[in-house]
Length: 141
Image (cartoon, rainbow, N blue to C red; front, side, top):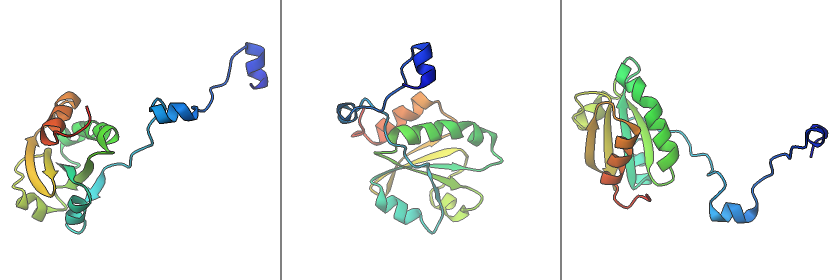
């Protein structure tokens, strides 16, 4: 306890005990942010992750910017099980054409390299979680 803690009678927070880490009560390790996808790394990303969700977006798109925090939050929550990628629509027109993206934001869900689901437009975090579980039925609840 620090000298100020002694005076105020407050305990300092302690690090989680080993049994807390094993039981999963301590915070999870930080998951990396969504990967920036290009024509150069797209196929490798699909190969490296059996489950992938791609946010097709552009910085000038207001709805895309509004959806960004929802996507980032889901990436933190589901990142251990799903690969999250961001695809800039203006920089990667060949990928946009390949997957027939007509509106942004668009979410592309891939399982084992195959497109299995598409969601267009801004969606809530609850709807996004629901779509993830529909696309990847074996995700932990």
